[in-house]
Length: 305
Image (cartoon, rainbow, N blue to C red; front, side, top):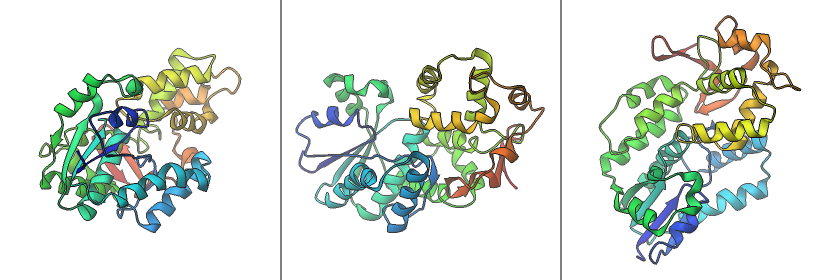
């Protein structure tokens, strides 16, 4: 087992993997590359600078936290040069898959001759990963997929386009069935719907959150976020802080006292008004400015403004 290294996409899963056999090395990948600006060259000085600036401005991460939680694990990965078998334990949701292709892009350059496996952890509930049994870990490992060089090239290509300033080219990835990374094409489709919709200026997730609030209401924002967290986990893979950030972004159309959706918010949901001009900012999804593009649901395609 000395030649085997595991990379875990979940803090909750890492301890379980560490107990699996006589594991020599387990590294936890703590990033949310599905949000904020990303650069293709994973691990470069500019890459980490961009990531820190995003996490600092969006989630108030300190430099110390960034170094301890993210850079330290990355440095452990850089130092792990003797392992020639690498297992990537990642779920099938959007956030996990974006992290996965970023790591595969890095491995393509820095561990070119390694034997790489994807361990799909969607066979169980990742939110309860700390409760996984040894048998569940063994089952996930037994169903691992060995990735070919073509799979790795495909992941790197998808990552390059994701990091480019033109997400339109991702459409061809979303229609592909030529890879063992079977969850990736569908997640690229999910990603494209995160750009503001022609219909009302909301991303699909923003629309879902506002619609759910308008339909069911809530007297407890934390409970509302907890429920939405559970229902979207297998699709977006957002954590609760990410969902709270979206909730706050939509605050112009939510009553601060009752949490009811205001009249204008209901009009936006019906397409009778558009949120684009008020929401527009300089935020990024990958390498593209979010509000430089629109998602046209009727045509099923993304448009450049």
